[in-house]
Image (cartoon, rainbow, N blue to C red):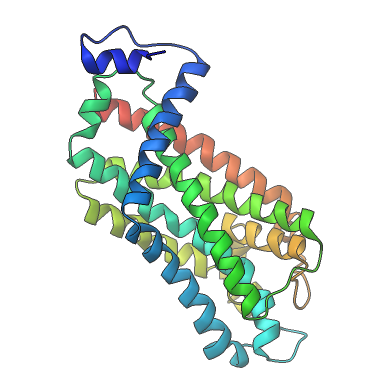
Length: 285
């Protein structure tokens, strides 16, 4: 059965379809297009894997023995248990830059105008792109988890809780991909999108509990780190993996990290998906 979109390619543009089912179908078509592109250009996936793997190896073998977590002795093994939740979270959020660059590239190549001529939901282009990025992020997490196991990281709370932790990571990554979508729609070139997609992520990830305990930071910075959505997901993953090294922070967001992680991800998704779709409509209107 031919769809309305396929009819549009061969002739006059019919009236745009309505309804959630049509939007989901259109989104999946766009997602498949992006996933197919990733398989045809494997360098995208390979280079996306290199950075997190290098972070794991450098932190575990170069700096792990020199960083001491309060209440423990400095050792590379104890630090790798502490570190991996932060590396996982950093990996899913750094995928934001790829989403920004991909959407900016589609804008500059005129694909937005082509999509606009089709009888498809306006949100489908962005939903499809973010879903494709989510699939790539999931693959990256699998490879990164294997590398982490090889260097000594372990799961101590069982497979179901570990899967729940990876679910939180993917939810955070999906939320941040909408931030990347908005950035990609707001700049004029893929190069600018890549820079804009990364520059704000460095303070976000380092002013958190990802690499060092928050208690080691200056007092005025600790409050920011505790309420950082990145910190909530990292702490929730440590709890679910059973990787808590040293005492748990008594701050409310850290004591309710799983709840805060879900709430932050849902709020970010709701706000930035709305802003992105609105920006897309104005950019292609």
